[in-house]
Length: 67
Image (cartoon, rainbow, N blue to C red; front, side, top):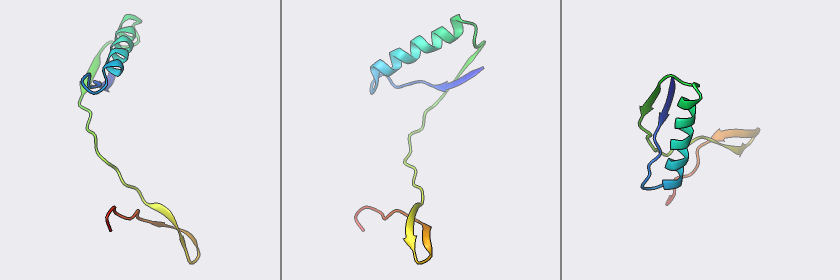
């Protein structure tokens, strides 16, 4: 089984075409017996940054824009 999310052809037509070729090749080569399609969810992730503290680097948060 192979799990993937489809590339949106409206925002990335060449990426969708490339993905189609790749997925068809996987099936034709017998590399997978089933492809399970999910949904891609775009979201912004934030992570702590290393900031200089009194005793060396320490974890901190990135400042929010506009503050």
